[in-house]
Image (cartoon, rainbow, N blue to C red):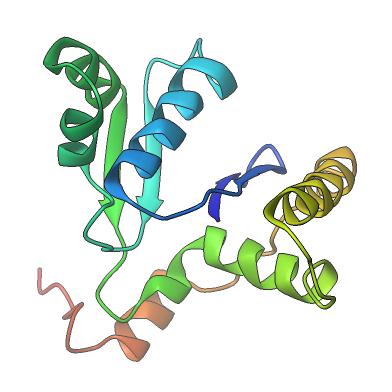
Length: 151
């Protein structure tokens, strides 16, 4: 599953795919740019450091001109290694698991329909995450990755 989450809008989208390859990721990004946010000048992505999550995946899936067009719309920020829990999409995945995935799904299509119904309910309520983790908290929790800035 690939999760797209726009926290300020209370919007999320989950793509259920057969695999989680670079090409699958690239198609999710193309939908993000062309279907979900076609008028956006810039899309800020915060994502983990999975080896398939990057602009190179776009070039693997699409012709160079198309890959460049998609990449030019993105501002990518990676969460630190072992810090994917800082990614709000990971929190949405956790909520999805608790609210939707507790029962056996006998097929990918059954899973996709259950996930789509969950997504519709969450989006209709404009459910947001009350993010309370501050930069100061980050500097404590991930001290070795985020040293204090000395002015």
